[in-house]
Structures are given as C-alpha cells and as structure tokens.
Image (cartoon, rainbow, N blue to C red):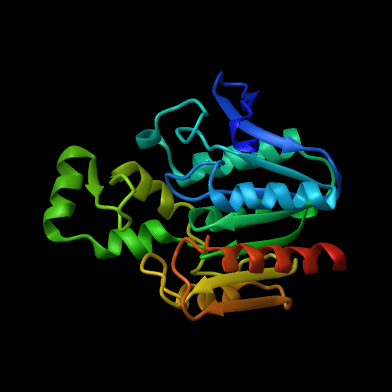
Length: 254
C-alpha cells in the first residue's frame, strides 16, 4: 500500500528534516495540510493522493516538525513554526499553482501559507478549518486550575474526544505564538476560490467558525458545505467522496 512506502526527506537549512511523499503530475498540484497531532498518513491525505494519481494530478503530503516522521518534538512546536514548514515544503517541493487542502489546524496553516504565497495558490479547501483555535477553542475554554497549571508548568494535557487519541499537549508557547497569527479579527486578504466543508456534529470546531471565516475572506467565491451528521474528522466514505467531488470541480474549473 502507498502508506508503507518510506517517506522522502526534505532538509531545512537549520538541520531539521521534513518527511514527505509527493507524486508528479499535471498542474495545478494539490497539497494536503494535516491537523493538530495528525500526520500525512491519515485517511483524507491518503484518499486524496490516490485520487490525484488517478487524475494524473501532482500531489504533496508532509509532516510538520514534531509530527509523524519529521524531526523535532511536538510539544516545542507552534502555529508559526508549522506554517513555516508548510511554506518551505510548498516552495521546495512543488511547481506552479497549487490547491491547498487543510484539515482542522491545517485549515489555519493553509490560510497563513496562502497569504505568504499568494501567486502560488489558486484555490483553498478547508475541512473543519480551525483558524485561531488556540485562542477561541483552547485558551477561552480553560478552567482556572488549568490556567494555573499552564502558568506553573508551561504546559497542560487535554483529553482527546476520540477513544484512539492521545491527550493533547497544550503549551503556553503554543498559545502565545497563536496570538501572533490570529486571522479572524480582520479581513483575510485572499481572493482565490475557497470551499469550506463543516460537520454540524463537530464537537471540536463549531460550525459557526466556517461562517466567520467566509465573512472575513475578501474572496467573493466562497462556498460552505454543511454536513448534518458530519463530525470533526469528516473521514467516512461519504465524506471522502464529497471531498473528491469538490476537488474535481475546482480542478476542472481551474
């Protein structure tokens, strides 16, 4: 299976390494940006890779530092650092225009990368996109005791909602850096086509986040697909089929 192929390695100038898999193909290429504590071997990334192979489309998936098979320690990572990983990977490993597909935190990274690489990004797809989640969905929900522990220890562990998930490590550094990368308070100066897919039963990212995001985007070509029984992962067969169809429509138009 594709998931068993050893990843390729991209070395950063600072000595860190980014694990990735890419396939060559026609333009525009597709880049998948995974979520918080997720890696490039998830079901959405793999489904998109197989679909792009079928279409003959270029495709890239990779692990942020501290994730998957990339170097680094997860607890030392920040939104800004992971965005830099994404920008570096796109610049070094792709050619021509790209469609960015961001899942959860990857939706935030997607927006930050697109703002830096305006001319290289021709469309965006957000899956339960979670811009500003460190401020709106974590910091704002902490108990007084968690805040004290965070101040004392520099980190806390937050239980994962999924049975197979490890607790999330939340650091003060992550929250502080997140504040430097908030997007939803101002206009987001992106004019590319944007497609947002959001489950109404998402227990991690409120569906209203998608509405806030479309309001802040300056693009006039923004469509939101709300899934009545969709959860945060959006990785059921119907979800993957929907994602492929939306991507196809964008690619064919581009």
